Image 1: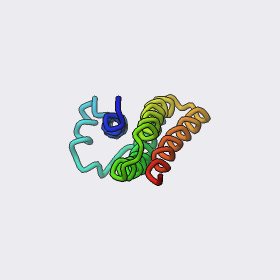
Image 2: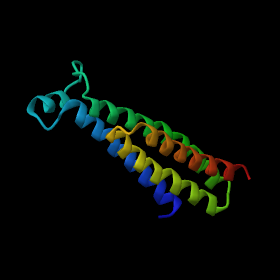
Image 3: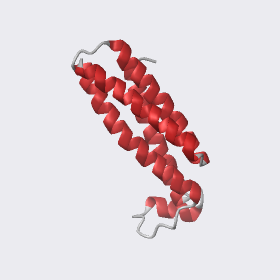
Image 4: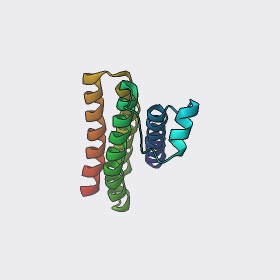
Length: 131
C-alpha cells in the first residue's frame, strides 16, 4: 500500500475501533443493548474490562490519527521525498493494527512498545516535512 492508502486504512481502523468500543459498551447484540445504542445513552452501564480497553484503544487511535494526519499532510503538501513518508505510514498503520489487538487482549508492555513504534512513524513523516 502507498502512503495515501495507508492513511485511509488508518482512518478505517480508527472508525472500526470506535464502532467496536460502542458495540461492546452498549452490548448492542442484545435487545436491551439495542435500545441503549439507539437511545441517548444517558444511563450507560459500567463497561466490562474488555469494553473499557476497547474504548481506551479507540480514543488513543483517534488521538494519534489526528497527529499522524497533520504530519502526513505537511509532508505531502510540502513536497517531501516519498520514501520517508511511506516508511512512516507503514510503521504507523501496522503498529496501530497490532496496538489495537494487543490492547484488546490486555497485554500492557507490548502495547506500550507498539504505541512507541507508531509515534516513531509519525516522527519520521514529520521530519520529512521539515526537510
